[in-house]
Image 1 (tube, rainbow, N blue to C red):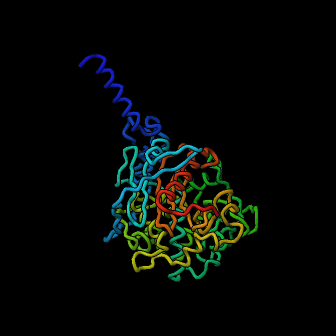
Image 2: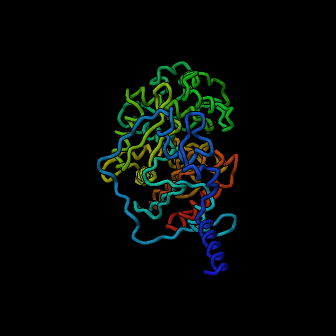
Image 3: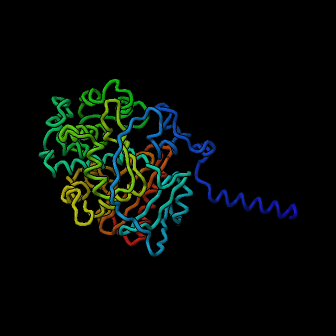
Length: 416
């Protein structure tokens, strides 16, 4: 082979490698095989982010509680016909592969009518990885509240939290109704800026160390910015209170409830797990971990309004109250609760005419659902920034991609 042809071949191989490269691979630990963190101090560092966020139970010192899979998994067959996905962002057209090349996505699953349209794993991940949800876990907590209500373990959503979580009685959160907690409308001031110096960081430290305990942190939130039920203000503490209501009302752990009330009935293929705090309580506001396909199965359960086959797993009326903009007070509607989303019972409500909603977590995690069209999209990611307030571009492109998925698969994108 001539020197010129050898040089050309090398250039072609390099070009092919660059075309397949995933964003920021060296920064995210590619050369070390995407390792998990060495402990609680560094598990979320950039170089450990891919590894830790797909195997949190492998991080030394991280306490977890298992959630057991079903003996009869719900099938997720591949779609019989290829359905290409395209979208537009900043007036430029892109395809699905372009999206993956542009953003730090570790897993992507798209379902249409219970069939897999697309399933992709990036950064060396695979179908056995159990992806960290961050605040998607809040929606799981809300689903368990709905089942507890249907079973009579919780008598009414208008009961104060302290009726069940007795260690919060006579505190402002204990006096807040379960319904207001579900809508994050306690009116109590809890800061969530993701700068390491806010109340959510204080809550996370108490989970890890137990100093002070989580209950002490929750009882310390006393300043009020509004009357209860008046407006939506995002606060992870309110989801944590709901978790403590659940365990107190049932006498069972979050992991046991998730196994018996959700994971096995919906037909999960893999075991999942919750992160557990120093006080042995599962963390209800974040840190539920599951495989990409099982996140998809959960989205499919929501798309079917809580049913698997003939079995009603989560009450339909509760799910509508949780996810339908028409069921929310005016202050919680899309374009009112926030400049874009509305907020239901721990679910984000899209400003579309067709009921569409999402479970969302920081750093890019999401499950999007449009029940009428049977479309579910799951994304796991390792974005550099926690929220769109810090870096709007990846979140804006994700929203554009979701609209493209709807358009490509026959969903409804008419605005609210």
